[in-house]
Length: 233
Image 1 (cartoon, rainbow, N blue to C red):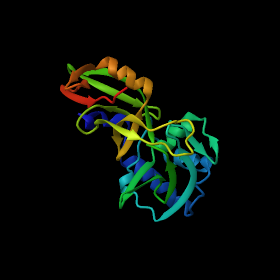
Image 2 (cartoon, rainbow, N blue to C red):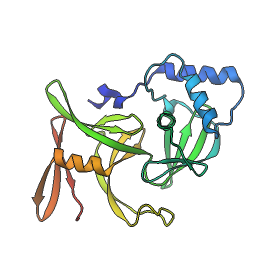
Image 3 (tube, rainbow, N blue to C red):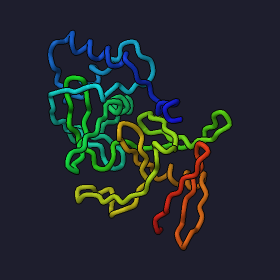
């Protein structure tokens, strides 16, 4: 079912060809560490596409890798060169080229273009879910989640929710101590944190029950039942 809604975004050959043509015509590699330069490149490469599109990132194999002074904070904020990025449209645009790679237990995040990968820092996970609702299709009810950057995804076997521990670093003054947080797999192996208010709403939508002195949250989506073991309060 997830493939039918395509996680709320568009993909296709047009995205790949228009960006590739842009690279071929320019003949040079631009300095994408500058936000405006990267933004202009992505917008000009979009061609005639309408709506929000996720390019076929798995088909791009850039040889150039550079570091970008960009940090996605544990609270979902994007900071560039020490300053908060306040233009949500810019954040949403860059989120379409987020890419994750894992090697020998080490996880790295990038903003990926056909010609260059820009390594960025992510304190926790790169996406944040700030809304959840019930969507009915063909008589079947789904739990549908929306990220702050425009992804729409339904709870199913390919997009599970899990609770896991998150321990902030010493530098993260806004998060006082280790805590259990809810996460959901969204796309391209990218995970989203489910915001606190959204998770509270989720507990109201679902059913809380006790089993063997443990609190279980039962969620119904797509005709299936999913269970989450709630942490001690």
